[in-house]
Image (cartoon, rainbow, N blue to C red; front, side, top):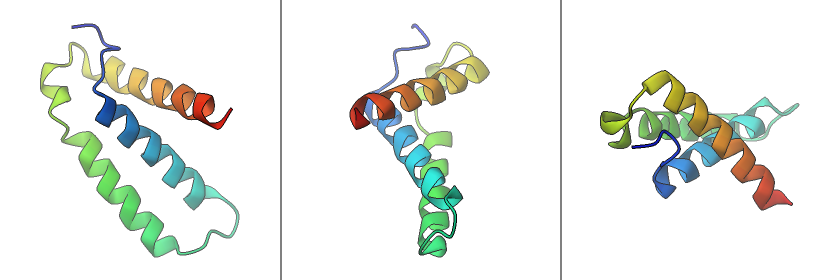
Length: 78
């Protein structure tokens, strides 16, 4: 299995994590409690996703997922 063969739901979860993190990191964010809870929930979903059982190289795969989700989010915003 290639390291870039991520399930769609995993990429979407990582993209949602990125969006939530960015919202929390913005100057004077609103509703920080809800953002932190969402970030924690998304982190757990990312960490325990069944894909990681089959991933050939976990550190490389996690890094590639973050990169892919960033480019996926940029492409959607354009």
